[in-house]
Length: 288
Image (cartoon, rainbow, N blue to C red; front, side, top):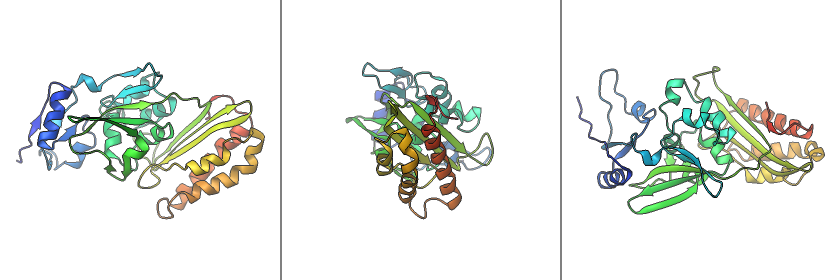
């Protein structure tokens, strides 16, 4: 039976030193890493590098609102904790609450879901719509960048040797209307076939901000600032006049090989539905 070298640091400083010195892999909830290294029932998983178990580090836990109004979510916060916290934006709470089974949500961490960079990952999609950022720490210091910039593609990120995700920062949101939908092969415990988040800020009958992001639609979450700009500044009564232009621009932003036609069609219908609800004067809050 192959031996796995594991370290269990007592604090974040010790963890960062081990990760840097040993080029160790980080294990938090283990919902992705343990599966990727699985060798079968009763057999130790295989890992190409030493493993640092960080699940006990208090520095990486907790959810709070900072003085600048940003919401800070510790990288070790589980999907269940994110889904249940009133401090977390409703779009992220929706995604977290529909992520797999209860047991998975109780162990999978928000930091791990981002670092895994799966095209079908549930959490990055609404975070990208909200312009959320990741905080990266190492013995050399700290970096911040948008989640959209951090994830380069399928299983590819800008995480450098010796770094870990320490927290996620979500800026204050003025979105007055929002919509989330996950499509899978069944109603629960399903891997995403398609996810979408849409948000808009409406003031005095005019679109001040419009955003949309789609997951499981390509190598990374799709968001088109160019398409969004088509609707910004338009009045609610003008939305039907620009809807098709927006939908075509959104569709053009997606690689022809990135999304099968049924996903393109479903995405178009959900975006169209949201715009129609806005133009008809939907009440503020979640659009069902």
